[in-house]
Length: 68
Ligand SMILES: [Zn+2]
Image 1 (tube, protein in one colour):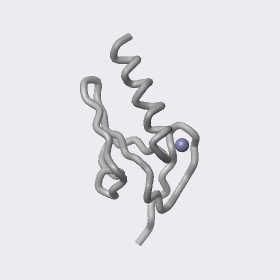
Image 2 (image 1 turned 90 degrees about the vertical axis):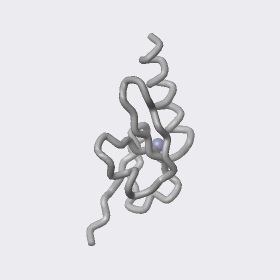
Image 3 (image 1 turned 180 degrees about the horizontal axis):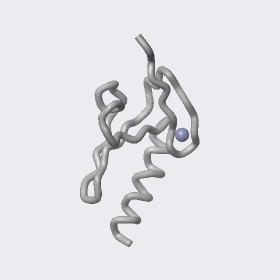
């Protein structure tokens, strides 16, 4: 069994076993935050963040893009 390596989109941190990371799935009208599960992390288009702070960075950017 080969473990995937996940990479935080904000800081570039990498982990093979990201227990407390956060997954975000979104499109232009909806953003969904997931606690880390393999299923959520491996879904097409899923984005990966090393923690709440970096997930929030992305959420802020997404909201600004939507409202701007
Ligand atoms: Zn990070």
